[in-house]
Every structure is written in C-alpha cells, then in structure tokens.
Image (tube, rainbow, N blue to C red; front, side, top):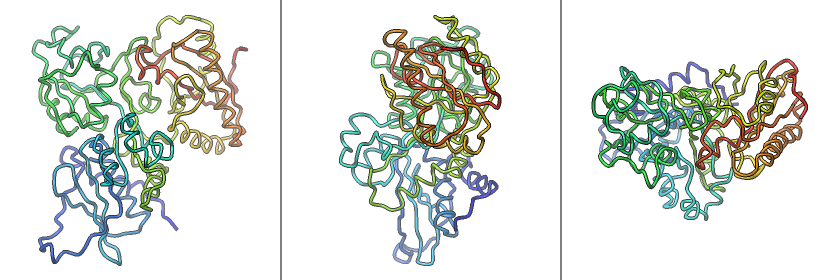
Length: 472
C-alpha cells in the first residue's frame, strides 16, 4: 500500500534542491572507486529538456517518486557537469538512477527524436515542426503525449531599488529590442544606461518571452547578455541597479518583479492566482512530453505521480503554481469602458458574492473543444464539487474579438454550456449557472495569437449562496 508523503517530507525534498542560490543540484560525493569497481547503475527513467523545470522541480519529483512509488533507500545526487545530474538510490538488486539533463526546452524534442530520453521537459509548447518530426511517437499535441505539469509566470525583474514598479508590455518590448536604452526615458526612471539580460536560444523561457513580447521585426537586442541558467540571470540583475531581465517565478530571488499591463487590461502582478488563471500577460504552462504509447513502464507511472495531488504539492513547494484547485476573492481591477454596459453589469451581479477558482477553462480557436489542461482541470473540479455539493457554480464564458460581436456572445455561451454539460455527464449535482461575457473584459491583447488564446476562456466562480443572475 502506498504511503502518503507528509508535508514535512515534501519540504525536506525541496530544501535539498534549493541550495546555493537555487542551482537545483545537491552535490554528493559518490566515492572514489575506479569505474571497474563501481557497481552497475540501472537508469530507470531519462528526463531531458527545460532548465526551468529540470533545475529544481523534476529532481524533487523524481526523489519523491523513487521513495514513495518504488520504495528505494538512500536517494542521492551524482553530478557530472553543469545542468546534468543523476539521482541514485539503493535497491535489494543494486543501484538504480533517474537521469535529468536540463539544457533547454529545444533539447527535449531533439532527444525524444534521437531516443536519448523517455520524457521531454519543456517550458513552452511544442512547435508544429517538432510535432511533424515526432509524429511516429503519436500526436504530440494530444492529451496522450502533452501533459501540463504546472504553471509559471515569466517575471520581468529589476534591481530591488529600482523605483519603477509597473510597465506596459510595449515598453518592455522597446527595452529588449533597444528602442529604449536609458532608464530616464521611462516615467519615474533613474539615470543610466539599461543593461539587458536574457535567457539563451535553447531556453523555453526565452522562446515564450520572444513569442509574446518580441517579433521577427523587433528581435532581441544583439548585445543582450545571455544566460543558460535562470538563477545566474536573476543574481546578476539583483546586483546591478541598471539591469533588467526575465525569469521564471521561482527565480525572482533577490530581484524585484514588475507588474505588466497588456493592451485592454490593467497592470497585473505575477502571483499564484494571476498565473493559475493565466490572466497575467506572461503566464505560461510547463509541460512534460511523452510518446503516446511509451515503452518504458516508468514513463506513465511518473507522469501520473507528477499530476497527482502529492505531485502538484511538490510543484507548489518548488515555487511554481500547482493545479490543485483553490478559491480566492478576486480583486476589483479597473477595466476599459465596455462596449455593452449591461453585459459587464450582469457579470458583476453574478459573481460579486462568489470566490473565483484558480483555473480558467480554455479552448482551441473558433471552437468549443477544450484544450489539454482543461481536460485535467475538469476532473479536478469534478472531485472538488462532489466533495462540496452545497456550493454553487457560475461559469462565465468569454471569447476573443475576432468576428462579429453577437456571434462571439453566442460562442462564449456555447463554451460555458459545454463545460456545464461535461460536469453533468460526470455526475456533478451542484447548482450550475452560465453567463456570457463575449469579447468583453479581455485579460490580454486581441492583436496577437497568444492574447487571443488567453481571452478564449470560461471563468469558474464558486460560492455557497445561490447567485442572482439576470435573465439572458
């Protein structure tokens, strides 16, 4: 019978990897025996790819997996080179290991292709070209191959004494492309030339930042200082009052994160709630990719463990945002004037006494088909609601701004109805109401694909009292 990992043990596992400024590797002496005298090591599982995931989170997950799922003893880390480690453990039959190589998200797909790894770690979604190259492993965009491990926000960071606390996405773009080169070109800025720091080209963090903030016409500044490691980038920025950079949430460390404002949305600070709902402009998903039918028996077992409640607790304890559902009181944020006052008032009346769930259900473009994270979140929400049948649910559907306004209202209603129907099919008995927001209250710009993707959503609001919803 499997034992539930105590919270204290989870914290200890995380603590082992949060050393030396967050390098993610616990350096252990393995011994000085010659190679011929050393006992053979059976590698159970190989995970390659993202440094963001592989530096701390996956080592913590792998340690817990070895202890809780396999019951091994004396888990320790063997480190050979930078961003490469092997977790070792003792079994009655000998030494087993889990290999974790963290050289960037691009290497996840290259190594899956060359069969050098069993699981690819990526801090960005797989690209169409990579899907084509890996088609022999299955549909890499399907739920059988693409697994959302957790969420992260790419924080734009500055020195803690920098007086600027928020910035529009356009200003961020101008800084990282070199159009703005001095801090005093910004309102409230100090005097001095801006020193720009960025992750390297193999990084999923850089790839996500590039796709949201930069463009082919406006590429990254040529003399930007590049880093393979999130921790080194953050440390460098925190030591230079003129520096700016970007990194994952767990790596803000001693630097200061900025609130970001996208077109049509107010400044939003990256925290666990705004990242969990993916409302924050630079929120992103963290992925594990596998073959649809993995040969290695540990592949599916590890994925199931990582997505379980205990695995998601480790995601949170590693500084990322987990997918276990929580509720929070949403802050009132100033919105742009809506096109239809009655629509926004209807939403406000429906949700003002409720709490918002830390999820948004998102959909494929121009469709009512849930994406891969939404399918997993549907099961989590079902479990939560069956345990709390007295709580009411309000599903608020939204769309991007492509197409006709009234058509978008209809589409957002259908999306909320799809979710309501799926919950009923899963035998959720709670009182469920739906409401349509159409293209109102965007959380991101509708001028690019990433922004449109964020706006195609169904928000989940939960409360104990029956909400008053205006008739549609």
